[in-house]
Image (cartoon, rainbow, N blue to C red; front, side, top):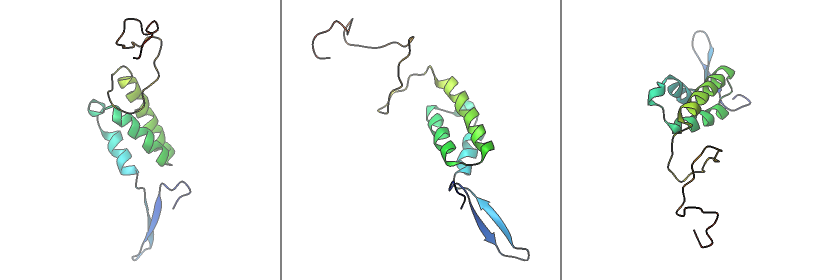
Length: 109
């Protein structure tokens, strides 16, 4: 097992003993990296970040960083509905309210 816990090696007996190196996370990273961007969604950005933290190979981590940057650019302006944490609003974001001017409203929202 590697220090990062992302790979392990097994010995294969035979005429010439050899070792095989395995990673439980590389197949998922490969699938994500080989998928056309057209078929990607906002959830893939979260998957790329999650996989990056679990993989020690610098080349795969760099590829996941590039993918995440492209996905952030692609989905930065999309509206996502759900119960997860909301992104902080920026100076050009639009806020929705039940009241014309929520700062002047004195009652309960």
